[in-house]
Image (cartoon, rainbow, N blue to C red; front, side, top):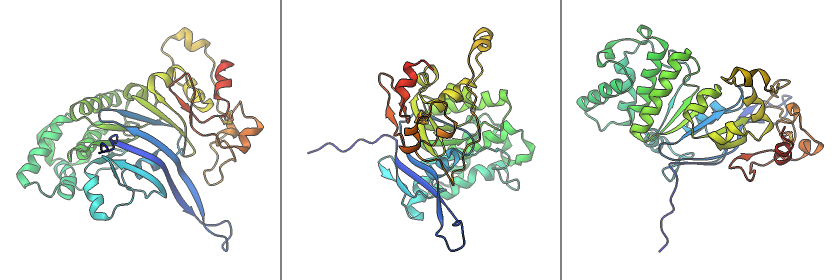
Length: 337
Ligand code: SF4
């Protein structure tokens, strides 16, 4: 008899998410804006995948699609061996326990009319109806303490807290149902640097304690480097590069990743003064009218004729452990550019 197939905690295959747009003229058929296209990755318990890219690259749409807030046009999101992209409401409620989202703006994501106790209790009432009132209360106070908030904050309102404390409430709300995967969509971007460091440390501690798989979406590459085990670089909804975190920061392979990395400050003032910056020229093209061929070609210093014609697939660039979607990754690397 064949052994049952072993799935990672989260397996994403060929995920596509589209937004409908009106046609150019009233009698034209509606268009499809490809917000996420052909995304693939795996995630194991205790592992963090960092997702980076400029605003508008599809990171937040990906987050929303993973937790079921945005329907997928095609592809699969397999959580614990079960495809969660096409579930009815009843089945979706069950899987929502297992995959939770933390939002960017801590204050805006909390209902100002609800106390902290009510905010953290809400997902428990919806997703864990089997718990008694006493069990719910015990879970809430335990969770508040685990995220570094006093249990007696339960009767306070969000406006009584700082941004960092509100984000701790947001994390408590997401983790109180004991999910297996936590998706953090720019969860520390709105916080001051010192508070940001505290929240990142808190997430790392909770991840270790609970064995969470973490998807950490951010534009701050220093934070992504600190928290991630592997990183995915997105541009106009597609993956440009995917690599273990140390490899990506030591040797970025895709021209877009190289440009992003060259903007990260280096602590050594001598290196910082002498290193070359790659300036990304022009704006991110409109996802409604993406360039032909390679999506990055309109801003790429290395673009050739072929780049306007053929879409580069994400492929392993040997001998590295990184995958890059560039026809000329090896040549660019050999030239030491
Ligand atoms: Fe640049 Fe061409 Fe590579 Fe795209 S495929 S990143 S345009 S060299």
